[in-house]
Amino acid sequence: MTENLIFYSTLLTEIKNRIHQAQTKAILAANAEMIDMYWDIGRIILAKQQQEGWGAGVIPRLSRDLRNELPEVKGFSERNIGYMIRFAKEYNNFQILQQPVAKFERQGDVSLIKHLIPQIPWGHNILLIEKIKEVPIRLWYMQEILKNGWSRDILALMIKNNTHARQATLASNFKATLPEPQSDLVRQTLKDPYIFDFITMAGPFQERELETELVKHLEKFLIELGSGFAFVGRQYKLTVANQDFYLDLLFYHIKLRCFIIVDLKKGDFKPEYAGKMNFYCSAVDDLLRHHNDQPTIGLILCQTKNKIFAEYALRDINKPIGISEYELTRSLPVNLKPSLPSIEDIEKELEGNLE
Image 1: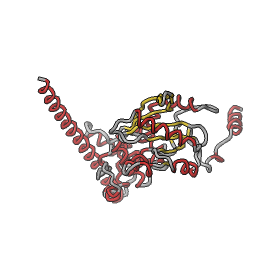
Image 2: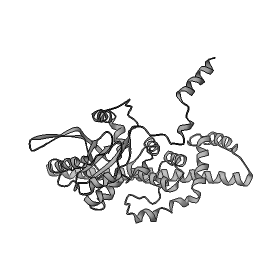
Image 3: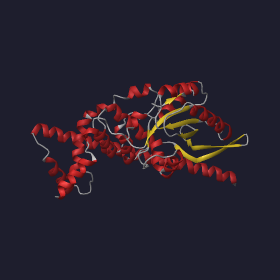
Image 4: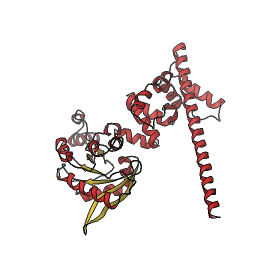
């Protein structure tokens, strides 16, 4: 009887997986067809505008007539038709789809989907067009959308925080301590710097206060860390030789299949931090790591770091450790600061308006 239940459970799971696969394919096919239609409509309008000399004034009329004659069809507001035209301009004949394939295949990216644009939701495509001008950067975000399932809001946040520019930039010894391709995957997963602009801390702060705030805003913290991080605990206790040690923050990375220890430091990086993290990684490997897990990774987060100090500190360390900076607020560009009004200027302006 038990054996029959197991066989039935396996059958049910297999059928459910097949249904989900079919549903996913149907959604992707429908999305691709819709985007192809939007591109074609944008191309047709562009061609007519060029041939007949029509301006933007045709769009409101077209939107109104389409909605009157096809009331059951959605997506033909003036704004969306404008996006269709812009989309057609950006991707003339979809030539952009064919360019990056060989490049990314050479990099061995198994997650690459050959035709990126038709498999990304319309709203995501428009956001990328509006916010990202450089095609290679836009393609990077497309890959991440497909790989991580980012919503439009998450994509907007990632673009705002320049996530693409913070990949594989941290100081680390991963190449020396991890085999390929694990070392490359870890470098691509971790960032430098991390942006914690969702925290508001006035004046000087202690490391424990920063830790408290990060855990208080755990959802935003996990979004900034990136896809795959699972929170294990704060001030996680390890007992070694009858002595207790406490890890600031402990995570398990689902995709990398390893524990990640995060050590928060206020101020500059100091070389002794690497030795302490090496000890923590050894302890976690012995006490927590499953035999199928990859080696534990240490991530030291400081406000600032000297790259030469960091490289020397990690050179003879045998555990995989990365050193990144963190920012509580994004600093303003230097050329923008002089153009901003001072407090005195604002007060004078207010006084003048009240007189």
